[in-house]
Amino acid sequence: LAKTTQPISMDSYEGQEVNITCSHNNIATNDYITWYQQFPSQGPRFIIQGYKTKVTNEVASLFIPADRKSSTLSLPRVSLSDTAVYYCLVGEAGNQFYFGTGTSLTVIP
Amino acid sequence: DGGITQSPKYLFRKEGQNVTLSCEQNLNHDAMYWYRQDPGQGLRLIYYSQIVNDFQKGDIAEGYSVSREKKESFPLTVTSAQKNPTAFYLCASSTGQVLVYGYTFGSGTRLTVV
Image (tube, rainbow over all chains, first blue to last red; front, side, top):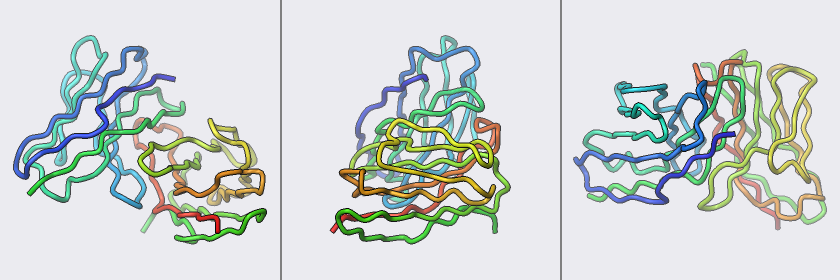
């Protein structure tokens, strides 16, 4: 089961771009990288998923270098409503995933 | 609307009592999961089920029990053997291909021992 390492917390001002990096040194060939967002007293929700290079959707971008030992979630122009915990998960389809403690992002006015 | 419903939202338990948390999904997902979250902590897997009438222990199964008699339902019982049950409990479901569609989570049940 691939474990991940993320910063415990980050602060950012409104309107800035935020980059959260996740380390996953023992990622396997068939593993994908998935990011979730969790607001207080709610269940996490899926943000974005990728295997290599770059993935972009309406919410975020995910950058994955060639060695795939890390990944970076990029949130463009954050607002106060982006204050949440962000989890990086690594794994293969059908297997279980390790959520870890995530990164607590606080957006400051 | 398709989704996962957890009930109750808040639950209070006396010492020594068993309590059951409900989780129902209408997404036609095969797999269902129970996670526990303590303040400032990540999610820890209690039990999961990939098919009806079958379930597997997660990382912290001691003091908990589950059943999966129907595809839509995956109730969790917190027994008196669980020494520190106060936590936020999250139920999730997924298709067989978790990585393609991801997990769908319920809104959680906050259990407090009084």
